[in-house]
Image (cartoon, rainbow, N blue to C red; front, top):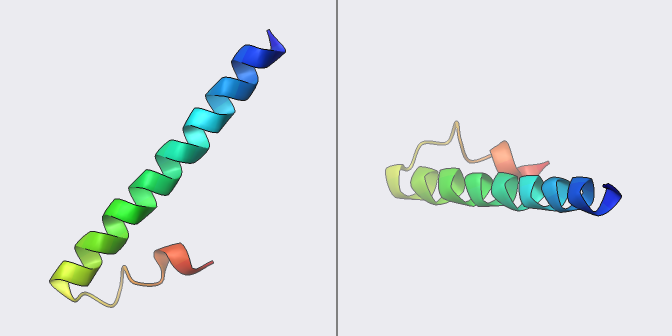
Length: 41
């Protein structure tokens, strides 16, 4: 049970990092400074 939860958390973190990376790359292409600082925290 604990292993299942840990795997879900890990997948969630990976998905979040991928989403940040996609948004970051899109903002680089568009040159929109608004999205540039989302992944900077």
